Length: 170
Image 1 (tube, helix red, strand yellow):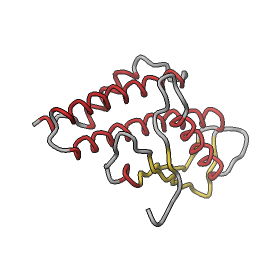
Image 2 (tube, rainbow, N blue to C red):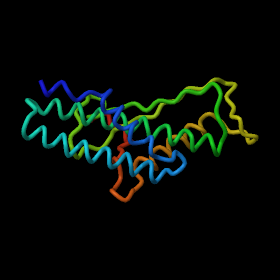
Image 3 (cartoon, rainbow, N blue to C red):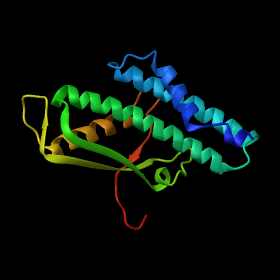
């Protein structure tokens, strides 16, 4: 059925093809390509949802795929940028965890992204830069850069709004 034809792998391939044309050092152009990718797929998805798809659950799943792909691409941009300024880290792991509708694969057309940042580093953490920084400082810079890139306004608008507040009541 048509419900099974929109896969995350296909979307990843599509975005990779578009990004081949981008200069990795031009963050604005890179973001604009991602915004156009997002917009075109959301329009196509809305058409399918109104005319073809058997449930809104499929649309929510595909919207979550789009968000995950864009998060991964913008994370790579943020990581390269922070490494350029602070040096490449050793013994360091960083994760962006989806919460709320992102975490449960229930994104809608106007959902913000609830995310939590986690990092782990050895006591021997350092970077290739001559200046010494802590793992916390590196993680903080990486999270701030990621937030800036995802929420930065491109010509076509920003990619997503982020919600970083943890609320036990939901």
